[in-house]
Length: 288
Image (cartoon, rainbow, N blue to C red):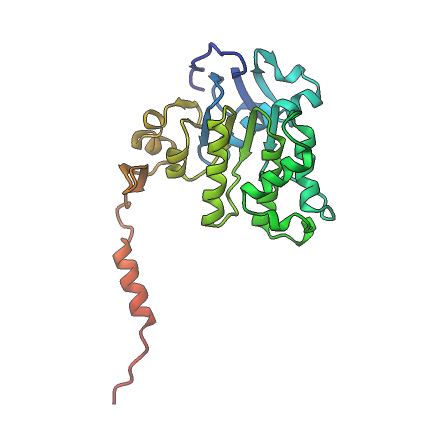
């Protein structure tokens, strides 16, 4: 196991601090102990291979059952020692398989989040729920039963629930995995706005270019966590070491940083694939 990771471990008030935190599975730590402080306004993109511990890290923060060493603190207080109600006012979590009873209406599900959060004086729970649905462009689903929704629509409802909860720390586990391009961008913009408003947003994702585009800090989860500024952490050298693939970094026409895959030797390039498809689609010609 690699050495522990220490990144800016002197937290300010209302910072989310990790003190030698390492999730455990099967009697072993998933990665080297992480010590870091995330201040309000942080948008942390969490990336890494399947099974590396991205979801487990969120579970450790939210206290949803994953065993771990170390301590997570918010505002200097140990999250593990908080009562459930107090923790809900501080932390909001969307998992990959967030549950809701099929018979409930969408608005009722979102109100569960609004009622759990600490948003007194910021409008009623119903008003905050309507606002969250409106922000994600799904207000027309408010009266629908959860059982009638598609997978992507359910994902949007769970996202709205977390937004309505409006906790200072928001945790999202692959929140756009089932979404079309339009809703993907809508969601990422909404989460980015929360970070700009002073929330601490943690989001796991697999799209490294999207992580570069939206995050102001990135954590690459492997045996050792690399956490820091996106341009310093998510480099072609790191991607080669963690994922075993070659990439190159460049700016998109809009000026956003992005990554491109370097075609491995022996793989057909795009033009070859297009030519092969065109050839296969041509009608057969019978010669006399």
